[in-house]
Length: 361
Image (tube, rainbow, N blue to C red; front, side):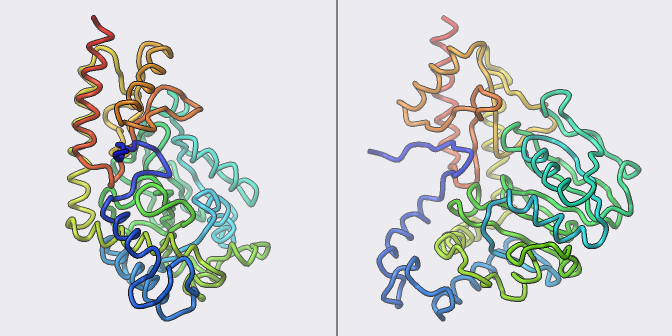
Protein backbone atom coordinates (compact mmCIF):
# COMPACT_ATOMS: atom_id res chain seq x y z
CA UNK A 1 0.00 0.00 0.00
CA UNK A 2 1.31 3.45 -0.91
CA UNK A 3 1.84 6.02 1.82
CA UNK A 4 -1.21 8.20 2.33
CA UNK A 5 -1.22 11.95 2.80
CA UNK A 6 -1.49 12.14 6.58
CA UNK A 7 -3.24 15.28 7.87
CA UNK A 8 -3.25 14.19 11.52
CA UNK A 9 -2.94 16.92 14.15
CA UNK A 10 -0.58 14.69 16.13
CA UNK A 11 1.12 12.35 16.23
CA UNK A 12 1.68 13.70 12.77
CA UNK A 13 3.48 13.10 9.51
CA UNK A 14 7.28 12.88 9.56
CA UNK A 15 9.58 13.64 6.63
CA UNK A 16 9.82 10.58 4.42
CA UNK A 17 13.59 10.89 4.11
CA UNK A 18 13.86 10.83 7.90
CA UNK A 19 11.81 7.65 8.10
CA UNK A 20 13.93 6.01 5.40
CA UNK A 21 17.16 6.86 7.21
CA UNK A 22 15.76 5.72 10.56
CA UNK A 23 14.68 2.44 8.99
CA UNK A 24 18.15 1.93 7.53
CA UNK A 25 19.72 2.52 10.95
CA UNK A 26 17.09 0.63 12.95
CA UNK A 27 19.14 -2.52 13.54
CA UNK A 28 22.47 -0.79 13.88
CA UNK A 29 23.36 2.85 14.37
CA UNK A 30 26.50 3.30 12.25
CA UNK A 31 29.61 2.03 14.00
CA UNK A 32 27.83 1.10 17.24
CA UNK A 33 26.72 -2.50 16.67
CA UNK A 34 23.35 -1.72 18.24
CA UNK A 35 20.10 0.14 17.68
CA UNK A 36 19.64 3.59 19.16
CA UNK A 37 16.76 2.07 21.14
CA UNK A 38 19.24 -0.30 22.81
CA UNK A 39 22.18 1.93 23.62
CA UNK A 40 22.91 3.46 27.00
CA UNK A 41 21.93 7.09 27.29
CA UNK A 42 25.29 7.66 28.98
CA UNK A 43 27.35 6.05 26.22
CA UNK A 44 29.68 8.04 23.99
CA UNK A 45 27.54 7.13 20.98
CA UNK A 46 24.40 8.54 22.53
CA UNK A 47 26.17 11.61 23.91
CA UNK A 48 27.00 12.48 20.30
CA UNK A 49 23.35 12.08 19.28
CA UNK A 50 21.81 14.22 22.02
CA UNK A 51 24.56 16.85 21.84
CA UNK A 52 24.18 16.95 18.07
CA UNK A 53 20.42 17.40 18.37
CA UNK A 54 20.87 20.35 20.72
CA UNK A 55 23.54 21.95 18.52
CA UNK A 56 21.31 21.69 15.45
CA UNK A 57 18.25 23.09 17.26
CA UNK A 58 20.29 26.01 18.56
CA UNK A 59 21.47 26.71 15.03
CA UNK A 60 18.15 26.53 13.20
CA UNK A 61 16.28 28.52 15.87
CA UNK A 62 19.18 30.93 16.59
CA UNK A 63 18.90 30.19 20.31
CA UNK A 64 21.07 32.61 22.33
CA UNK A 65 23.80 31.27 24.60
CA UNK A 66 21.94 32.37 27.75
CA UNK A 67 19.21 29.79 27.16
CA UNK A 68 19.22 26.12 28.10
CA UNK A 69 17.73 23.48 25.79
CA UNK A 70 16.10 20.61 27.67
CA UNK A 71 14.85 17.33 26.21
CA UNK A 72 12.18 16.09 28.61
CA UNK A 73 9.17 13.77 28.81
CA UNK A 74 5.54 14.27 29.80
CA UNK A 75 4.32 16.18 26.77
CA UNK A 76 3.37 19.84 26.74
CA UNK A 77 0.70 18.99 29.31
CA UNK A 78 3.40 18.41 31.93
CA UNK A 79 4.65 21.93 31.26
CA UNK A 80 1.30 23.33 32.34
CA UNK A 81 2.45 22.38 35.86
CA UNK A 82 6.22 22.70 35.47
CA UNK A 83 6.10 26.35 34.43
CA UNK A 84 4.19 27.64 37.48
CA UNK A 85 6.03 25.29 39.84
CA UNK A 86 9.32 26.72 38.63
CA UNK A 87 8.37 30.39 38.21
CA UNK A 88 5.91 30.93 41.06
CA UNK A 89 8.89 30.87 43.40
CA UNK A 90 9.46 34.43 42.19
CA UNK A 91 5.86 35.68 42.40
CA UNK A 92 2.93 33.23 42.79
CA UNK A 93 0.86 34.89 40.05
CA UNK A 94 0.81 34.90 36.25
CA UNK A 95 -1.21 36.39 33.40
CA UNK A 96 -2.76 34.27 30.65
CA UNK A 97 -4.25 34.92 27.24
CA UNK A 98 -6.98 32.31 26.75
CA UNK A 99 -7.16 31.39 23.07
CA UNK A 100 -8.34 27.79 23.12
CA UNK A 101 -8.45 24.33 24.60
CA UNK A 102 -4.80 24.09 25.54
CA UNK A 103 -4.70 27.59 27.05
CA UNK A 104 -7.63 26.61 29.27
CA UNK A 105 -5.74 23.54 30.48
CA UNK A 106 -2.64 25.61 31.23
CA UNK A 107 -4.75 28.10 33.21
CA UNK A 108 -6.48 25.38 35.22
CA UNK A 109 -3.17 23.76 36.15
CA UNK A 110 -1.51 27.05 37.16
CA UNK A 111 -4.38 27.78 39.54
CA UNK A 112 -3.28 24.78 41.60
CA UNK A 113 -0.11 26.61 42.60
CA UNK A 114 -0.96 30.31 42.58
CA UNK A 115 -3.02 33.00 40.90
CA UNK A 116 -3.76 32.62 37.19
CA UNK A 117 -5.36 35.79 35.82
CA UNK A 118 -6.99 35.70 32.39
CA UNK A 119 -6.28 39.09 30.84
CA UNK A 120 -8.13 38.38 27.59
CA UNK A 121 -10.07 35.57 25.95
CA UNK A 122 -11.67 34.73 22.61
CA UNK A 123 -14.04 32.17 24.06
CA UNK A 124 -17.02 34.39 23.21
CA UNK A 125 -16.63 33.41 19.54
CA UNK A 126 -15.51 29.82 20.05
CA UNK A 127 -11.84 30.83 20.01
CA UNK A 128 -12.00 31.77 16.33
CA UNK A 129 -9.74 34.81 16.78
CA UNK A 130 -6.88 36.20 18.88
CA UNK A 131 -8.02 38.95 21.28
CA UNK A 132 -6.58 42.43 21.00
CA UNK A 133 -3.88 43.05 23.58
CA UNK A 134 -2.02 46.06 24.89
CA UNK A 135 0.63 46.50 27.54
CA UNK A 136 -1.71 48.11 30.08
CA UNK A 137 -3.64 44.82 30.41
CA UNK A 138 -0.70 42.96 31.92
CA UNK A 139 0.54 43.03 35.49
CA UNK A 140 4.19 44.23 35.49
CA UNK A 141 4.73 42.29 38.73
CA UNK A 142 3.52 38.93 37.33
CA UNK A 143 5.92 35.99 37.31
CA UNK A 144 5.19 35.46 33.63
CA UNK A 145 2.69 35.91 30.81
CA UNK A 146 1.53 32.74 29.05
CA UNK A 147 0.34 32.40 25.45
CA UNK A 148 -0.29 29.53 23.05
CA UNK A 149 1.30 30.68 19.81
CA UNK A 150 -0.76 28.35 17.61
CA UNK A 151 -4.09 26.82 18.57
CA UNK A 152 -4.18 23.32 17.13
CA UNK A 153 -7.88 22.67 17.57
CA UNK A 154 -9.26 26.10 16.70
CA UNK A 155 -6.81 26.91 13.89
CA UNK A 156 -5.63 30.35 15.01
CA UNK A 157 -2.21 31.83 15.70
CA UNK A 158 -0.60 34.94 17.12
CA UNK A 159 0.53 37.07 14.20
CA UNK A 160 2.54 39.25 16.57
CA UNK A 161 3.73 38.81 20.12
CA UNK A 162 2.12 40.91 22.88
CA UNK A 163 4.01 43.84 24.36
CA UNK A 164 4.45 42.86 28.01
CA UNK A 165 7.47 44.88 29.02
CA UNK A 166 10.07 43.03 31.10
CA UNK A 167 7.75 40.24 32.30
CA UNK A 168 8.94 36.85 30.97
CA UNK A 169 6.85 35.59 28.07
CA UNK A 170 6.10 31.86 28.23
CA UNK A 171 4.84 30.16 25.07
CA UNK A 172 3.30 26.80 24.36
CA UNK A 173 4.68 26.41 20.84
CA UNK A 174 3.79 22.75 20.41
CA UNK A 175 2.03 23.00 17.08
CA UNK A 176 4.07 25.61 15.23
CA UNK A 177 7.62 25.38 16.55
CA UNK A 178 10.02 25.32 13.58
CA UNK A 179 7.10 26.21 11.30
CA UNK A 180 7.72 29.93 11.38
CA UNK A 181 10.51 32.21 12.55
CA UNK A 182 10.54 33.49 16.13
CA UNK A 183 13.08 35.62 17.96
CA UNK A 184 13.84 33.35 20.90
CA UNK A 185 15.21 36.28 22.91
CA UNK A 186 11.64 37.63 23.17
CA UNK A 187 10.67 34.65 25.36
CA UNK A 188 11.47 33.51 28.86
CA UNK A 189 10.39 29.93 28.12
CA UNK A 190 9.34 28.12 24.96
CA UNK A 191 7.99 24.61 25.33
CA UNK A 192 6.67 22.15 22.77
CA UNK A 193 5.45 18.60 22.57
CA UNK A 194 7.44 17.04 19.75
CA UNK A 195 4.70 15.13 17.94
CA UNK A 196 3.76 17.90 15.51
CA UNK A 197 6.93 19.25 13.90
CA UNK A 198 9.85 17.56 15.65
CA UNK A 199 9.61 13.84 16.39
CA UNK A 200 7.30 11.04 17.52
CA UNK A 201 5.24 11.50 20.68
CA UNK A 202 7.23 11.08 23.87
CA UNK A 203 9.63 14.03 23.71
CA UNK A 204 9.08 17.55 25.03
CA UNK A 205 11.47 20.36 24.16
CA UNK A 206 11.94 23.22 26.63
CA UNK A 207 13.99 26.32 25.84
CA UNK A 208 14.48 28.38 29.00
CA UNK A 209 16.41 31.54 29.79
CA UNK A 210 19.12 30.98 32.38
CA UNK A 211 17.85 33.54 34.89
CA UNK A 212 14.52 31.71 35.19
CA UNK A 213 16.19 28.53 36.44
CA UNK A 214 16.55 27.96 40.18
CA UNK A 215 13.37 29.78 41.25
CA UNK A 216 11.18 26.71 41.89
CA UNK A 217 8.62 26.43 44.67
CA UNK A 218 9.79 24.21 47.58
CA UNK A 219 7.03 21.70 46.77
CA UNK A 220 8.33 21.13 43.24
CA UNK A 221 9.00 17.43 42.60
CA UNK A 222 12.56 16.66 41.59
CA UNK A 223 11.47 15.49 38.14
CA UNK A 224 9.60 18.77 37.60
CA UNK A 225 12.51 21.04 38.54
CA UNK A 226 14.16 22.73 35.56
CA UNK A 227 17.35 23.17 37.61
CA UNK A 228 17.76 19.42 37.94
CA UNK A 229 17.40 18.80 34.21
CA UNK A 230 19.62 21.73 33.28
CA UNK A 231 22.37 20.58 35.64
CA UNK A 232 22.17 17.02 34.31
CA UNK A 233 21.98 18.09 30.64
CA UNK A 234 18.63 16.34 30.12
CA UNK A 235 19.97 13.05 31.50
CA UNK A 236 18.88 13.13 35.13
CA UNK A 237 16.90 10.01 34.26
CA UNK A 238 16.74 8.03 31.01
CA UNK A 239 15.57 10.48 28.35
CA UNK A 240 13.31 9.51 25.41
CA UNK A 241 16.38 8.41 23.49
CA UNK A 242 14.86 7.30 20.21
CA UNK A 243 12.63 10.37 19.96
CA UNK A 244 15.67 12.60 20.41
CA UNK A 245 17.47 10.65 17.68
CA UNK A 246 14.52 11.20 15.30
CA UNK A 247 14.45 14.88 16.32
CA UNK A 248 18.10 15.16 15.30
CA UNK A 249 17.28 13.69 11.89
CA UNK A 250 14.39 16.15 11.51
CA UNK A 251 16.63 19.06 12.45
CA UNK A 252 19.14 17.89 9.82
CA UNK A 253 16.33 17.67 7.24
CA UNK A 254 15.10 21.16 8.09
CA UNK A 255 18.59 22.63 7.92
CA UNK A 256 18.99 21.02 4.51
CA UNK A 257 15.84 22.78 3.29
CA UNK A 258 17.31 26.14 4.23
CA UNK A 259 16.21 26.44 7.86
CA UNK A 260 13.10 27.79 9.53
CA UNK A 261 12.78 30.87 7.30
CA UNK A 262 12.68 28.66 4.20
CA UNK A 263 10.22 26.33 5.91
CA UNK A 264 7.95 29.26 6.77
CA UNK A 265 7.80 30.30 3.12
CA UNK A 266 6.78 26.77 2.15
CA UNK A 267 4.17 26.70 4.90
CA UNK A 268 2.73 30.01 3.78
CA UNK A 269 2.32 28.68 0.26
CA UNK A 270 0.64 25.50 1.50
CA UNK A 271 -1.76 27.39 3.74
CA UNK A 272 -2.59 29.94 1.04
CA UNK A 273 -3.58 27.15 -1.37
CA UNK A 274 -6.03 25.64 1.08
CA UNK A 275 -7.47 28.90 2.40
CA UNK A 276 -7.98 30.25 -1.11
CA UNK A 277 -10.05 27.21 -1.96
CA UNK A 278 -12.08 27.43 1.27
CA UNK A 279 -12.78 31.13 0.72
CA UNK A 280 -14.28 30.39 -2.67
CA UNK A 281 -15.95 27.08 -1.93
CA UNK A 282 -19.72 26.61 -2.14
CA UNK A 283 -19.60 23.66 0.26
CA UNK A 284 -16.69 24.08 2.67
CA UNK A 285 -16.00 26.97 5.02
CA UNK A 286 -13.01 27.78 7.21
CA UNK A 287 -13.85 28.48 10.85
CA UNK A 288 -10.98 30.75 11.95
CA UNK A 289 -11.06 34.51 11.46
CA UNK A 290 -8.95 35.22 8.32
CA UNK A 291 -6.54 37.62 10.03
CA UNK A 292 -5.59 35.01 12.65
CA UNK A 293 -5.49 31.84 10.56
CA UNK A 294 -2.94 29.19 11.45
CA UNK A 295 -0.28 28.04 9.00
CA UNK A 296 -0.38 24.60 10.59
CA UNK A 297 -3.97 23.63 11.36
CA UNK A 298 -6.90 24.41 9.07
CA UNK A 299 -10.33 23.55 10.55
CA UNK A 300 -13.32 23.70 8.22
CA UNK A 301 -16.93 22.61 8.02
CA UNK A 302 -19.59 21.62 5.51
CA UNK A 303 -23.34 22.33 5.67
CA UNK A 304 -24.11 19.14 7.61
CA UNK A 305 -22.68 16.30 9.68
CA UNK A 306 -23.83 13.91 6.98
CA UNK A 307 -21.66 15.65 4.38
CA UNK A 308 -18.79 15.80 6.90
CA UNK A 309 -18.90 12.04 7.40
CA UNK A 310 -19.16 11.35 3.69
CA UNK A 311 -16.23 13.64 2.94
CA UNK A 312 -14.00 12.10 5.60
CA UNK A 313 -14.82 8.58 4.41
CA UNK A 314 -14.27 9.31 0.72
CA UNK A 315 -11.12 11.30 1.43
CA UNK A 316 -9.63 8.38 3.37
CA UNK A 317 -10.45 6.00 0.52
CA UNK A 318 -8.64 8.37 -1.84
CA UNK A 319 -5.51 8.47 0.36
CA UNK A 320 -6.14 11.60 2.46
CA UNK A 321 -6.29 10.38 6.06
CA UNK A 322 -6.96 11.84 9.52
CA UNK A 323 -9.07 14.76 8.33
CA UNK A 324 -11.72 14.40 11.03
CA UNK A 325 -11.96 17.46 13.28
CA UNK A 326 -11.20 17.37 16.98
CA UNK A 327 -13.91 15.60 18.98
CA UNK A 328 -14.68 18.82 20.87
CA UNK A 329 -15.57 20.85 17.75
CA UNK A 330 -16.40 18.38 14.98
CA UNK A 331 -16.15 19.18 11.29
CA UNK A 332 -12.83 18.62 9.55
CA UNK A 333 -9.26 19.72 10.09
CA UNK A 334 -6.25 19.52 7.80
CA UNK A 335 -3.00 19.74 9.74
CA UNK A 336 -0.32 20.76 7.29
CA UNK A 337 2.79 20.65 9.43
CA UNK A 338 6.34 21.03 8.10
CA UNK A 339 6.60 17.45 6.85
CA UNK A 340 3.41 17.65 4.78
CA UNK A 341 4.69 18.20 1.22
CA UNK A 342 3.19 20.96 -0.90
CA UNK A 343 2.02 18.30 -3.30
CA UNK A 344 -0.12 16.84 -0.53
CA UNK A 345 -2.03 20.11 -0.19
CA UNK A 346 -2.34 20.49 -3.95
CA UNK A 347 -3.81 16.98 -4.21
CA UNK A 348 -6.15 17.58 -1.27
CA UNK A 349 -7.55 20.74 -2.87
CA UNK A 350 -8.03 18.87 -6.15
CA UNK A 351 -9.96 16.16 -4.28
CA UNK A 352 -12.06 18.72 -2.41
CA UNK A 353 -13.01 20.42 -5.69
CA UNK A 354 -14.05 17.09 -7.13
CA UNK A 355 -16.05 16.22 -4.01
CA UNK A 356 -17.69 19.64 -4.03
CA UNK A 357 -18.90 19.10 -7.58
CA UNK A 358 -20.81 16.00 -6.47
CA UNK A 359 -22.51 17.91 -3.64
CA UNK A 360 -23.53 20.95 -5.68
CA UNK A 361 -24.99 19.11 -8.70
